[in-house]
Amino acid sequence: MAPELTRLTDTPLDFSHDHDALRTAVRDFFSRNGGAWDIRVQLCTNLEDMPVEDASKPWPEDKSPYITVARIEVPVQEAYSDESYQKIDTAMAFSPWHGLAVHRPLGSIMRARKETYEQSAKFRLSKNGCPFHEPSKAEAA
Image (cartoon, rainbow, N blue to C red; front, side, top):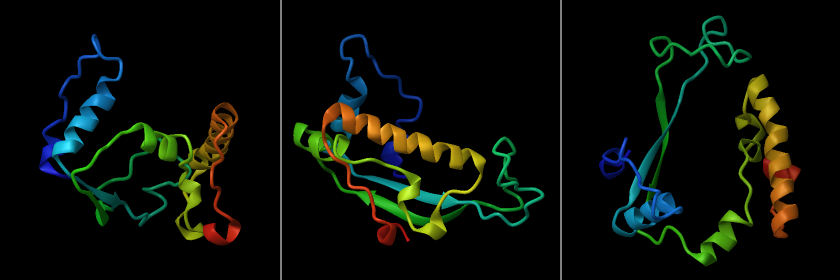
């Protein structure tokens, strides 16, 4: 992760004068700084020690250390505008189920979350009148 971002860890925000203090802080930060995030995964190397169906059991890092599989980097940019809000926040829906079939989430907790993601997207669509692009079966496969 970018050092500029990690320095913000545990930095308090004052919401007493700005109910959008978090949005304001993010917008101000990215107007001066870029960002970088490492995407890390743990591989299931042993179902006994790393049960997929029991989300309450942490996977031991000594048996499967986190591996960086990607890095997302963003340049200095305008992090929020009314236009981007309309294009992104109201017109898009996130779900880990939108990916390739081989990358779909595992475990009962993630299967339960699938319906929640779908219902949340439908609710937002019904309230803001903005259609979402749902990937076709071919796109998701």
